[in-house]
Image (cartoon, rainbow, N blue to C red):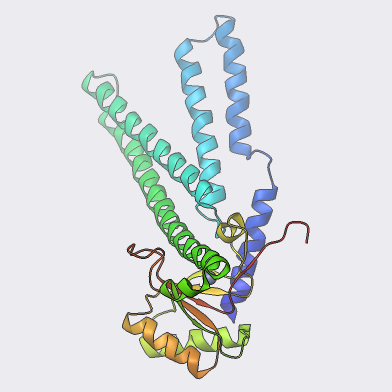
Length: 273
Ligand SMILES: [Zn+2]
């Protein structure tokens, strides 16, 4: 039960973040500093190299902003994931460059060895940031693979229903799936296997919306229906007469997108309706 509320809270906060299009104070500060330096350089009162540094600082603050809005958000599309990874990579590259420049200065005797520690620490923290972004990206890609498997099934159900069973096993149960059902399934799984149910998509997500799916009140679980844990889950769902779709492959011959969708099939969003 708690997961539903948590997912909802995170989603609401993520929406607030996206709604706030204004710049962060760090970006605004870097932009002001760049403008000031530009007029100083034009007046011949500051060297050109300082302007380059200020431009890099602005680009870096903008990348930090992209990461703040994405790496900590639970609701990303694949396109936002690509932006997030590119920003994380640029932040690592800039710090790697700073370390190599500092090493040169030390070699030339212009800087002391002590000056190397802070730039190396900055590089380490950018690498950690990159790892966090990568793990978020992995989850979003997995969710998107699963959503595409559901999209392929829906297309089959509409155009060639006789081929649909090749994509997924369908169980209609009593036709309903509630938060109370989910809380019970989740806690039974956890007490049986001693680990949390690997939920990959909780209700509505940005990925599903981008594909035009209304996934509200549905849950995707990243378990292969043929593996023991997936098999156990399907038996539990049948016991409780909870509807599911068990996806073995996204596309026949491709080992991606295998998962268990709990609840009735998603319905397509109707624009304006
Ligand atoms: Zn689903």
